[in-house]
Image (cartoon, rainbow, N blue to C red; front, side, top):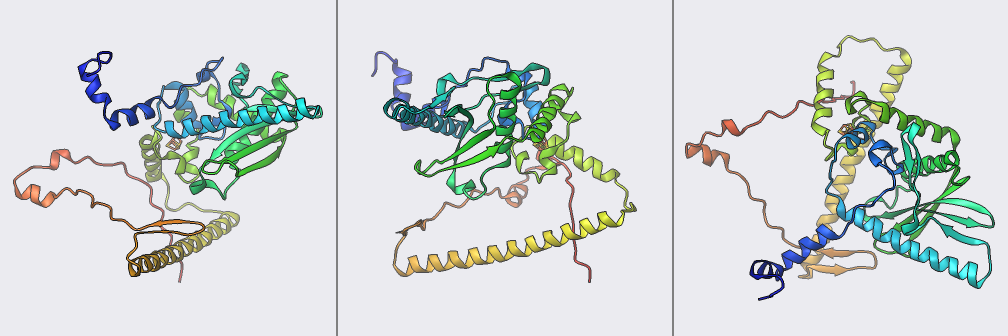
Length: 354
Ligand code: SF4
């Protein structure tokens, strides 16, 4: 028994569960900013759904993505160490005009309170007198390897460069948007983002609009409008969906459209139909490939195979526990008080004309 910890904690601390929960709890430390982030829209938020951003300014919402945040911070810190080694080599050894500023724990926030805008770049690279804005992103190769650069990250660079100009911190004409693969740090992709003043001004207007809105509900539900991927897990998900469903019931069923709108709808419906067919084909192909792989493993009595590109594993997952409602009711339990009516939701039905 540990004298330092006392009997209760000593027993608990001996378990692997204790250590794993502690790692998850302590792996991330809140970043301390020099300005009040509830008063401005930051660079990483500028392309997000305005309604969600406004909600986060008014309520202290915690999110369950600490692991991703910790990964990003850890990789960024390691990248800054690499920057220091690059600088040491080129500036000190080679005597060239190359150096990094405002990296790692020397990051600087730029704030325009009158526009409700702020940005904290990951640093600046100066080469031969030119200052380049830097943004570092870690990439999960299972998810986003093929769709880079992400529009939100490009917007972040534009917004940040504009804040540099307007606050007088620096005058970058381009940004380097750096993506580093989380599973293989040697896989680095860098996109050059030239400054676009018109795009940046539109983003500043968006920041101002978000900060001057009185309520999140005064702003567009951009997450829903762009397909809903951003809505999953958003604290306003039910509210936004209920609001949209309520609106749909008020729509007319005899509205008239002009020809251009009809043509656009026809084109979109055709594209959607093609996507549905491609999705079905892709699923059939996926099922067929899975069956072939399973067959080969079974023929070889094997549960694991390693190829040049993939690790393949055949395993058994325990079946999920299911609630047997009929049995409960047969036993005389009244389940009705436990049912809740869910939100209605809009249903889009498209049928091809004969
Ligand atoms: S649910 Fe979707 S639309 Fe609504 S605030 Fe969240 S992200 Fe925006």
